[in-house]
Figure 1 (cartoon, one colour):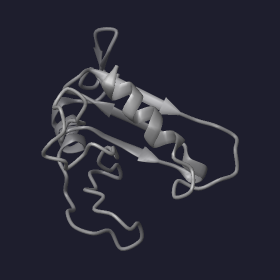
Figure 2 (figure 1 turned 135 degrees about the vertical axis):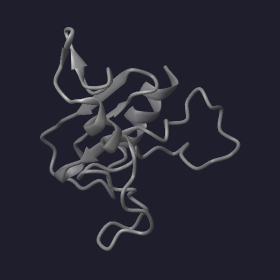
Figure 3 (figure 1 turned 180 degrees about the vertical axis):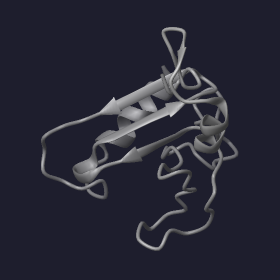
Length: 114
């Protein structure tokens, strides 16, 4: 539904104005808690990818600037890339943090390069 601009099975679940806000950063710069520029948008943040912000990256695997998602406790993550009409989620029951577990990043790279 998020990958399709807020529409699922022909029904609008998120109107276009709200979806535009989800795709547009409202807060830029280094986050006060996370050690990165999160580009917050209505509680969601930018896609995290090893390829983001790398000018030499093949655009085929670079995440869209309008993409957004959220990382949760223990390295779970869900995101969508509206330009690709693609959504992804990774949920697990392993006790770790996103800083010492790179599975969510590796899986994101695999999905983007598929």
